[in-house]
Image (cartoon, rainbow, N blue to C red; front, side, top):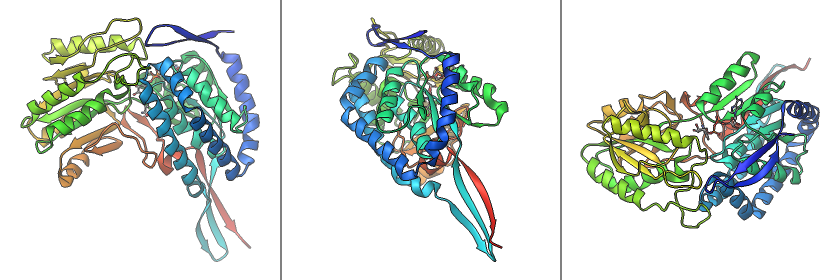
Length: 457
Ligand code: NAD
């Protein structure tokens, strides 16, 4: 059997060897899931909810050990691992509270002996191919509503977060979800590709644009439910009436939290010329205060780069930005190993000729560009093939509303950034993907609305 080696990106050490799946085991697991799904869907919603509530109890009980596992395999600073797990609890609560009314059968017409009803039935067996950067969040955004609505789930965690993926499986199984209803698949892209070959009823993917395109090509002609949550190049505009220091502190966190490896990290910043210099000075000062180091230390803010190959992307963006006239304020280089490390990096005088302002960086690096008007800022923010989130900093609600309404992005932020709420839909424009998770719509995404025409006589 093939093995998957798991490395700690902060030290380079091999920390585990996992038995990996192959095409034959994926096919066998898919067949078993198909057999098991009907019984799971036949349980009452209250019974399925009880399993997910027990899963929540398991997360609370094991939280510290789960945080350590995630930190060891991803290099995420330990406080941020705990934050992710603590942040998962209100998401679970949201799903448990929202599910009844969201999938309740609706009678939409009742006249003269004729009734019309909408019933929300599960899709059946769904595949979830997931990313490593927030493995609990992005995994559970799919897994929990899929299970609650009566689907079986074949779950392929990232090869860079497989220990966490197996912990999710352990806790779901301990909580009463049958082993053939929630099925982890261990391995890399080849195992993900093998999952796409199975006769599933939906594919829910979180990851890069390049892989998303491959997945769309592989399953597009099968007309199954397909959701792709992809990358971003999320912009923020700081208006001339904003407090430059407060905005800088908030946006430095938005750009560098989780070592910049968030799909909704702030990736480019536009600042009005009137407050530009004060903003940049405060931004650089904030970033210089971020402690880089051992992800297991309580005071570490910048951890390791999880995917070693990303170091080359960051180097290339730095070289390109310098060559095109960007001003390097801090960082701009790798840090010594072992492990994968990059210095938090801030460029001023950035512009749209640079990959830094056009392509996802997915690391602790940011470009800042000076603008002279709101119109210029809006045009630059919309000059992107991505559209996940976008934000504006200004004390004026009216100005913020007017600016935000013009932006091509799935989530809009006023005086905040890098924020996800279970109550709101999470989706992107353009190359940031198709479909959505979270909110009542992200629960219905795992169901098919079926039409009943009922004449009583
Ligand atoms: P990735 O595309 O490299 O991998 C994602 C998953 O796809 C992994 O499980 C991988 O094994 C699998 N995979 C790779 N090749 C495959 C193939 N040919 N067929 C099937 N599966 C295959 O992405 P990543 O590095 O894990 O994640 C980082 C990316 O995810 C970033 O671009 C980030 O912006 C994005 N992301 C988006 C969201 C969102 O909600 N929009 C959330 C988190 C991360």
